[in-house]
Length: 249
Image (tube, rainbow, N blue to C red):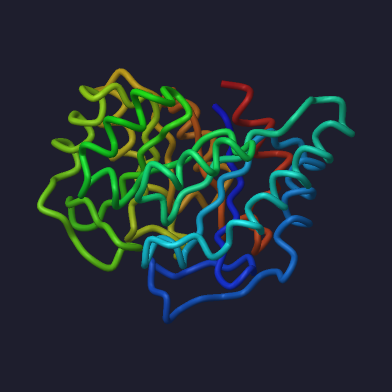
């Protein structure tokens, strides 16, 4: 299982939200590229980045910071003899041009969230043009898919929407249980078990991965990947150990 340590961006800083609430934001660093370097030095090979401002309004205010994270991660990974890092970005990607711009600049994968729900033609075009370099983020609250930075609920239930993504040729979905995000209560193992059994695509678990036991449990389910956010910043999870435990399955 691949570990994706996360950097959530707001105003150029690395932050974390509590249950997706922008009013409950903690700033962890003024230097997100330095965090990316630390990820690579701990043995990670990938970085999951979210532009929280973009997720709310569809803009890309942290674009240059995202590219700086990519450069820093690449440099640290190459220094460790592992080649370039893999950096993915979500938040604010609601037009073909935005996806194209990130991918042309060297970002390895872009994640469609709100746009995947509200603009199915955009979703299909992006998948047709970029294939596996497009992932879909599915944020879940009370069984329904949330949009616009988790501030609104769509009419889609999780299982229905996930099946639609598979049918459209999406190869990776990143599923976040909003109720578990940032609260350090453990991840929703049953949710990811059901998804992995129902779908034939890569599932990345996000939200509530707060202990090495969570990492081991998800790896045992055969989940493709797990995102680690707040647990890294608070020291609850040692990233080197998580990478090792994930790779063991």
